[in-house]
Length: 83
Image: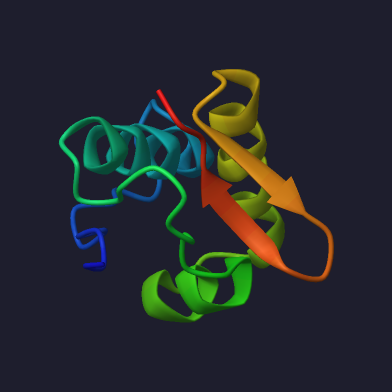
C-alpha cells in the first residue's frame, strides 16, 4: 500500500480542500494504488501529512463513502470497498 500524493493541494483555490483530497484519493483507489479491502491512511495521518484540519479529511472520506468507494468502521479505519 502506497501513500497517495497530496502535495498538490491548493489552499484558497476555487475547489475546496476536502474536494481536492477526495479527488486525489478517488484517483488513487481507481488506479489500484489502494486495493479493495486495503486500509486508507487515518484521518489524523492525512491531516498531519497535509497540514489541513482533520475534519476536512473526514469530509473527503465521507464523500468517498457516498461514492461507494470506501467504508468506515468506527475505531478501526476506512477501507476500500470491493468493486
